[in-house]
Every structure is written in C-alpha cells, then in structure tokens.
Image (cartoon, rainbow, N blue to C red; front, side, top):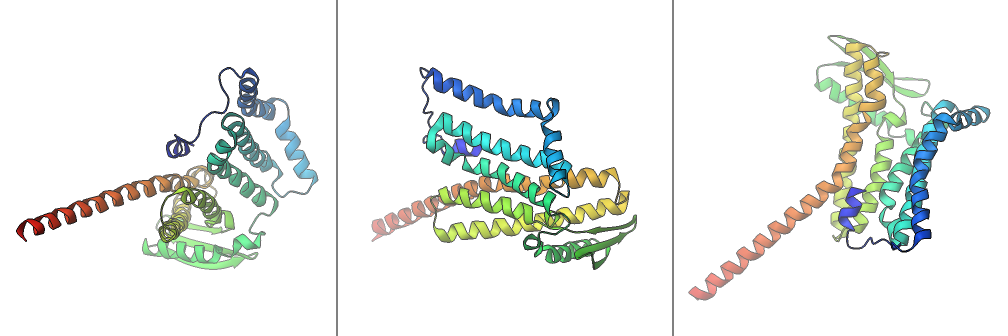
Length: 287
C-alpha cells in the first residue's frame, strides 16, 4: 500500500471533502469494520460458526477456514474503504494490495478443501520442486532419497544430526508464492512506462527467483528436521510462520528493485548521452 501511494501520489485524490459529513461518516464506519469483525470472531462466535459450517460441508481442515475467510473479508473491506474515500481511481490504485490479501485467502481455502495435493492442477510442479530441493541439499552434503507415497512426492534427507522425511504438497512447492507473485507483478508492471520486452524480462526473472527461493525454503525445513526432528516445534514454527517470509519478503521487495534498476538505467543512459554530446563538441572544436 505504501508503494501504491508513492507511485500514484499525484493521481489518487480523496473524493470526499471535509464538508461532506455523510461521506466522512461512511468512511469512519468502514474503517471500524475490520476491528469489529475481529472482535466478533473471538467474542461473538463467528469463528466457531465458520468452522462448524465447514465441518457440516465436509471440509478437510474446517478449523483453518476462519483464517481463510478473514483474509477474504479484509480484502473486501480494503476495496470498500478505497472506493468510498478515493472513488474509482482509488479502487483501481489499491487493487494490488487488495488482490494480494484476497489471493492468500483463496489459496488457504483451496488447501483446506483439497488438502494433501488433491488439487491436481497445482500439483504439477511439485516433482520438479522436490528434485531441485534434493539437489540443493545434496550440494550441502546431505544424502537424499526421492520417492512417492499416497500419490505425493516424498523426500528423505539424512545428515550428520539425523534423518527427516516429508511428503510435499503444492502449498509447500512454490505454487502459492508463484500465484501471488504473478498477480502482484502483472498489476505492477502494467503501470510501468517501459517496453513490453522489459516487462516480460522483469516478470521472467522475478518468477524464477520466486520459485527458487521456495526451493531454498523447503531445503531449510529439511535441515531443521534433521537437527530437531520432523515433529519438533522448530519445524512447525518455520513451516507455518518464518518460512513463508522467504517468498513474501522477495515479492514485496521486487517492485522496489524494479524501480531502483529503472532509476539506475536512466542515470546510465543520461551519462552516456552527456558523454556523446561532449565527444561531439570536442570533434566540432578540433574539426
């Protein structure tokens, strides 16, 4: 959202004046809704109602559904806030962060309903991811063994401190981060005043790095598992909390990297232009 403000500072203007009391009241109410929703989740049984509904509908992970729904609700409220305060331009301008939050909710929902790699379209890249992770761990000196259990790729890693074996499903194989990166990168690059070739190049490089960062995340899980055990608290904390920060930090940083590289390229071009003009001037003087 900070990046959107920086890029569109002159274009995103409030449509509500300080004299429009009705509009300001509507914005104030909408700004309170996220807090009211969280309060209702934990004190008025909304989370329990969502989980119970998921149980009745046969959702595999019903007690994870409240978090998925929370992401979707926050995405909708963000869009509503941007529209009320900034109008259509605000809704367009803040589509990137809203989509970012919404995609996380959609991905969580899919994984809750179709767990353990059951959503086969997303499972296509998993064998390649497992193979690359095995290659990275092999370079680090670990013994690796690839296999398959219950239709899912498995990887067994043995090191000096022990052995770890995990099955790998699509949420762990980089599909989640690639989907989020694709949405964020396409929206961001669409606004950039650069050639389509440059856009394709930036997207391809960013997608490749996003995918490889997730391979490194999987390799890290296995190194932690060999040291502390596959059911250890260290593995759980990294898998659910710290590990996702690998790709998220990169996805958030990449637009800034693009902006910095564009600024550097403009300086290089202006420097070359100045040098060419100086050389032409010298030639004219000596000529």
